[in-house]
Length: 255
Image (tube, rainbow, N blue to C red; front, side, top):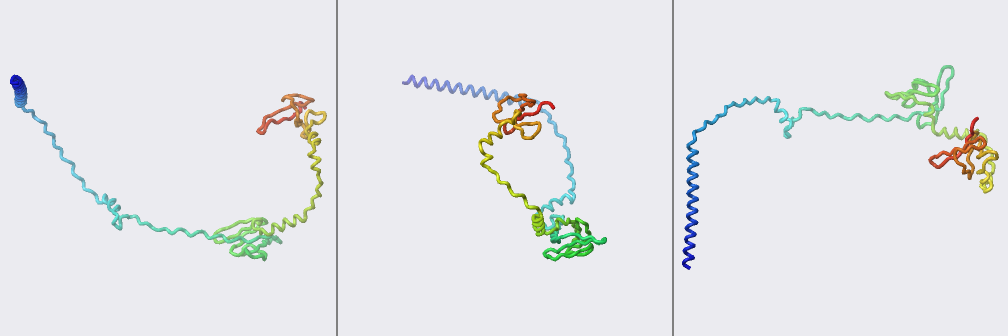
């Protein structure tokens, strides 16, 4: 047991000796570095050249204008005076035009028959006379010119004809028109009979197709399966493709 303690003490002494040796080496190296640093000659440092600052320019009073205009609590911050412009009054509606019934021209004097709006009485008016709120300024066979305030209106007599007169003229024309001839009764059962329908789908005798009176063209008969381009009796078969299917016809060949 004593031997173990002796060896432990020897080990501790060895560790302390090694640590002391390392500390001695570090101390010596630090001293050498300090001596080497202090033995260096001094190095002159370059002093920067002093440049004086530019003098601050005086601020003109006009530069304070944006700050004054943006100050919310200043009453005069906006120098632009806002003028409230009243919108213009809406245009005055044009009064209703008079009703026209015709023009009378005799011995160089032209008179137009007019009736004021809402009145049924007709009266002759000449140029320069007033028709209600309008002033009659010009009369022709088909048109009249009316002035109202600072506006001028040229109206055709057909536009000013009262609407009630149109049905009356239509009724008079209907009474004057001759009566249509009596309708001829048609036997619908005979038209839709299978025999007649079959006959209308057959080719015309002596021709390759059905003659519809078109002259140089025949309609293909039902069951005609001959190819396109077939020539028969001075007629050529033509089949064209259309949006609703094939269209078949016979056209005349030559003169």
